[in-house]
Each structure stands twice: as C-alpha cells, then as structure tokens.
Length: 340
Image (cartoon, rainbow, N blue to C red; front, side, top):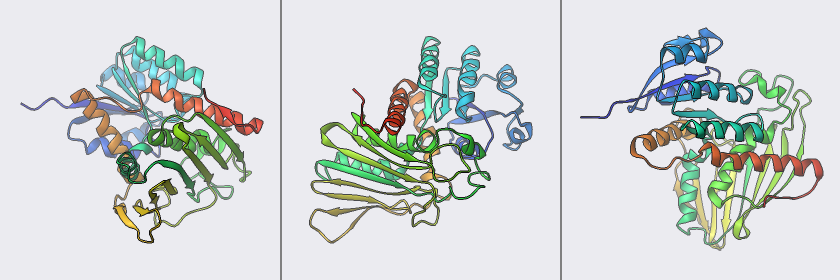
C-alpha cells in the first residue's frame, strides 16, 4: 500500500509564488489543498481552494506543510498563526524575518511548539552548485583556494527597475545583500563552510531605489579559502535568460578551476592545461534557476517521508542573517568584521 500524500497549503500568490505552486503540482507525494492571499483573485488564479487570509484557510484545512511565500515583514505573524493552528512543518521564504532578533525569537517559538521551520533558500539546490560541490568534495580542483561570483542580472537600470516583477524591491532600505546577496552567503557556506570574517564595499547606483544595488563582499573561510561576491544589478552577463544563474563564477584550487557560465553549464580546466572538460551541460529548464524550487521542495518532502536531515533549518539559517548583518557593519565602518 502506498503512503498517503502529504498535504500542502500556500500563503502568498505574488510573482515568485508561481514557481512554488508549479513545483508542488509536479510532486506526486503531495496534494495542494489551499492558497491564501490578501488579493483573493490572485489566490483563485492558482486553481486551488482560495482564501483571503491565513486564518480563514487554517480554519478550513490544517496542512502537513505550510509554504509561506511572502516578504519578510509578514513572516513572524504568519508563522505564529501557523503554530497556533498546530501546523508541524513550515517553509518560509527568504530573506527570513526583518532582523536577527525577530528570527531568533520565532525559531524559539517554533521549537517550543515542536514544529519544523525551514527557510526556502533555494540557490544551493541549483543543479550547477550541487555539481560544483560534488567536484570539489571529490578533489577535482585539489585544495580549494578561492572562488568568485559575478552577479549581473541587468535588471536594475532606470526609474522603473523591478516594478514589473517585484516592486517592493525599490522600497527596501537594504537591497543588494539583504534580498539577493544572501543567496551567495548561503551558497558559499554550503561549499566552503561558514566564513570567519567579511569585508564589504557597497554602493547605490540607481537613485530610484532606497537600498544599495552594487558592491563587493569578500569572505574568509576556514583553511584559507576566500570567496568574492561581486554584485551589480545594472550590468548583465552572456545568457539567453539573465535569471537562470544571474551571473557567472569560477572556483579555483591547486589542481584546476571549475567555471560556471550563464547557461548553467559547468566546465573544468586542469592546472597548466589549455583543454576544457564538460562537467554539467547547459541548463534546459525554462523556468527559474534550474528548477531549484522543485529540488528544494522535493528535498523537504523526502526528509519528512524518510526521516533524512533537512538543509536550511531556520536555526541553522540564523547564521546567514548574522553574516549579512556583519556585511552591512563592514560597509558602514570600512573595516573587516570577524565572525568569531
């Protein structure tokens, strides 16, 4: 006899939610039973039973998994409502909560309620980063020395930047690192361990937005590894889809270098060689980020059904927020900040 499917309800039906709903629909182990949004028409457009708010939805259905697809100011209230209704697994979009103190408090509340709280940080689930980690762990590049990612989505120019997709981007007082750079804080720590220090030089180019939209962040990792996040939302990179990888990267070691291109392909060049060997072919997924939303959701479902560990549990994700805060302190003071 096959196991009963897990039930999933989603809170939020904005731009990015399409990738969540689409991925849940492709997972045979789950059944979607509700969508809530303050714009009821957007909730109805999902094709699921629609509700105008979370309370109304949880009064009708209590899912195995609640997927919160909202901006940070709404996270705490939504999580508390879910805990009050005894939801036992909650996935919450990043950036997680408005600050570290709020995130710590809500993590403690979830743990006290016996609930599993997971942050939807999906970049580490992109197929190219999984392939790069496997190559590094197998010793392909030898001793890792450094890595650099160049963020170049090309979507940040002019007075209408971001308005067609995620207009709240313009109003975020902290933008490049808080909203976007956190992806590579988590990805770099996934690949090389938690950084021991950070140095940042951030700037604002587009006067139409409140926060920074370009800058450099240098991370010191254990064993002498250094990584660089080089972000500029004004410039683009060579790709048919600027949002597939959002840039390109190199991962260098004593025996060679792995290169990530904007098409999602990964290649390897050995130290001293002119030849390039393919590691991962170009991505063919038409949606977002190599189908990383699906891979994250599948990971959570598998963990619930098989008892395997979950990546990005909220308590562990507090480290990402702590690192992010140190980056802003570094940019404000012009100093390298040790992370202890």
